[in-house]
Image 1 (cartoon, rainbow, N blue to C red):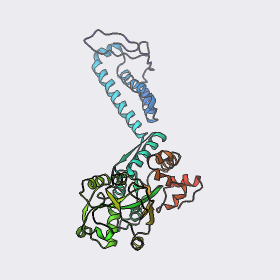
Image 2: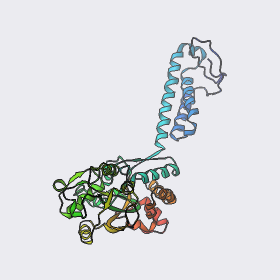
Image 3: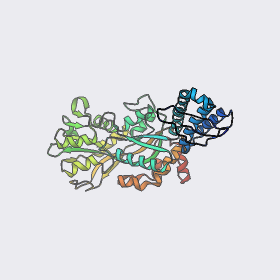
Image 4: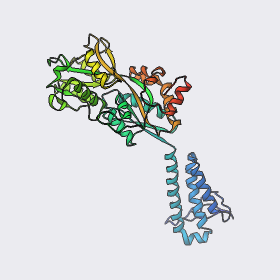
Length: 398
């Protein structure tokens, strides 16, 4: 077929067993200006005019072929070369446009927790808000073991944000088993979330009435690398119980723990999460467990080890088969990010979460605690982008 006609046109005739058919395509090129046309194409791509990419791709093919094939007679001789350069130009253009388009997108990965906990569904709601409200952002969630793994993933630059409980303070200061002497000073706070109580639950008819009775029992202490595991080990250390020798530890996530109670494979569990976390709802609704309380003396000992703990009471009848309030302890968790997150992006992420807070509360009522008044509960430096939003809202930040 013949493409283009006129004194200033280039001709391409594709050799084919089918009879050639003329298809005029008016793409005039000034004589000797094939290179200039190609340079204009490159400029279009670099300036990211992605919406015109199909036209740009076609233009690339014709400018290449026009530059190399000057007459219809030459086309007959160089037809195969013309076809080659057209295809090569098209593929090169596709690659360039695709690269520029990809670079225009911002990808955010959020480390959450196990699927049966609170972090995962709330993280999913955050990802949807950011993807829907921030132009060119694609946010996704990653199911993890919890706080410790989330910090490690951010340190390895595999994620940009992560849900963190009280262990984020230890990580920033270089304290605790996982971070002793290795301060994670790159950690920054983005938004406050909610208080996260420690639920100590035991199988009904297990004979366990006090914390001391956990000795010798089968206890789920959380998924490997989770904040729950760290919390459980801290508690047992205060109680003088050696996890390796004095109990039978099970490294289970929240959903796995609920299943283990149903199968009677464990006697007790430490479950750290928001009020209303699905695994606790499940096992209390089935009437499988009772709660253990944390007395004042035990709490004071915990406070000496970790000053971020506060006393907490689970209201009576908050869960089914829980007729009285339960004394325990909690910490205020936050959404952490890396310090190298661009300031403008952190600003938009913070702003859109507060502007769409109702969507988060619909997933977990405890997200009502994500307030400007609770920003001061972030115990590490606030990211500059988030700090800018808080200052605009009249909040002082450190």
